[in-house]
Image (cartoon, rainbow, N blue to C red; front, side, top):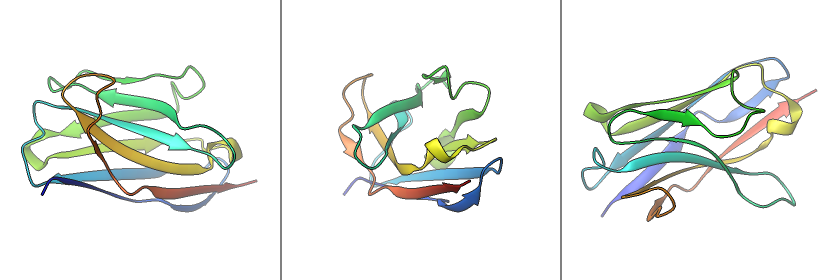
Length: 118
């Protein structure tokens, strides 16, 4: 059974860094888009960014560009989200997702909590 498992979340002070990992298993995801979403309390889930199967990786939001980097290791079926200069407003549950095309994320992880204290 295909599944995605996130790790690396936690509590960090503002200005700190975290690296989230998403390990995929149960099928080959190397031809899939793998992306990151987040959902803050009381807010809708938002798209953070994604990597295509050809390692074209993009952070979607202007407020995260320059602070967040997404990259993947197809050999290990893993996608990463490196987050630097974290802000309290980055506090959210971060989810990994994978799908055949953008907007068709068929597989989701259980989420990992990121809390940034001021």
